[in-house]
Image (cartoon, helix red, strand yellow):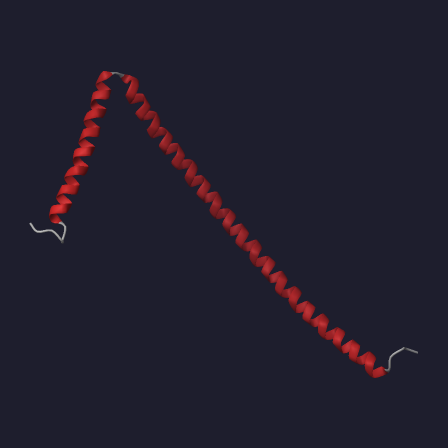
Length: 110
């Protein structure tokens, strides 16, 4: 015969069943959270792979431009002269745009 009476045993059995149901619901919730985390991780990995590809292609573009500029510099005196003219033109153009913008901006008088 058992140590406890029948009511105590049934009460313990009921509490155990309630706790096992609670545990099962918590396990189900934990499983769904884990699946959501896995989905997010896969999504972010695809995003990072795409960014990596974009950076590699951007790096190739910048290296190509840098190689063209490096080829112009030691190519002789004529190319240096052209580069100085281009730099002067860019500076003048930026100055002209800022001057024009200050004259045309809504707060200034014409």
